[in-house]
Amino acid sequence: MLLSPFLTLTILLFFSSSSSSSVSAIYSTPTCSNIVPFKNRTDRISITDYGGVGDGRTLNTKAFREAVYRIEHLKRPGGTVLYVPQGVYVTESFNLTSHMTLYLAAGAVIKAQQDSRNWPLIAPLPSYGRGRELPGGRYISFIHGDGLTDVVITGENGTIDGQGDMWWNMWRKRTLKYTRPSLVEFVNSQDIIISNLIFKNSPFWNIHPVYCNNVVVRYVTILAPRDSPNTDGVDPDSSSNVCIEDSYISTGDDLVAVKSGWDEYGIAYGRPSSGITIRRLTGSSPFAGIAVGSETSGGVENVLAENINLFNMGVGIHIKTNKGRGGFIKNITVAHVYVENARQGIKIAGDVGGHPDEKYNPDALPVVKGITIRNVWGVKVNRAGLINGLKNSPFTDVCLSVINFHGMAGSRAPNWKCSDVSGFAYQVSPWPCSQLHSQEPGSCAI
Image (tube, rainbow, N blue to C red; front, side, top):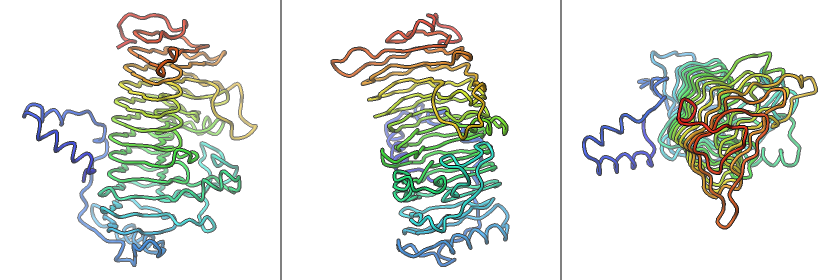
């Protein structure tokens, strides 16, 4: 796998200035990326073999679809690489197939055509019951995979550009007919690697694995304007064993948001997100850095986020749900986080997000339990934190330890606000709410 120029430079500097004992330490950096072994495929075709023209004007839909069709039906042993050389390749949406690598060379750009008239529609996800934005179906993602195994999207920091301006403007003008397309979506798929690429200007969510297992997102850069609506970075959704590492995300919505379905539809579908690991992530957003929810009706459990650097944020860490969601959020650990210039450091709330329709059950209350947040340092933070549980379903076992938030220069210290929560706190400044009892170092604090 080729590394990004930034990472390569970092490693070279490390090698040139380290002793042999220190050099060996680079290999001990924890990673979850080994859940999907990288495949070196020997069979290779180029998009230019199928008439692809990278002039920034020619429509290459036929070339991409024919190349993928060739890979699907010839079934070469070990799969096939679809190589995209330097150039700008405009295309409509296209599907991938199993046992393939989509490889973008340095300077290669796959750019979405800005025309919604021929954009295919697909059925809503069963765990959402309708499009996330509007009733009915939804536009298919720009690059899509359904029921696939062993797919790699990688390259030499090439770019996948969704040209989202058209879609954002339709959203602002309220002229959308259906829910906007994600940039890349995998449904009911497994053994997926997305790495060493730039994703920019997604119409909606950027990378959306839903009902998937074994997904690695690593060494990616995800970019969208700060005012672009709902351009989440990576949204694992009713998926298990997802690894997100060593990436930079700057978008108009949550950098990473773990989801699992929406109200009665997510409850009925009943597929949780579990085994989600997020490491060495840097980014900026007017919304959240690390988020869980608010669509968590299938349940979210066993999430680890660590070594996170957040700048110019709305909220650093946001765990969100609502009445009617049902489901559960449990065993969530967020550790070693730096937050600079944020409206709020930590928010854990039971009153966030709307509902798909009037059929939701307001008595379906979520269970939020086992939330551990530790080793967080924040500067220029307006409010330290807010934890608002639900009266008939209080949040329990919330543990905060070694957390320091500092306000703007000359302003008073940021404060906390809490209700319907129980748990513990250790070495938290400013001191949080009285519902979190002082705790000496122990299983909760460390």
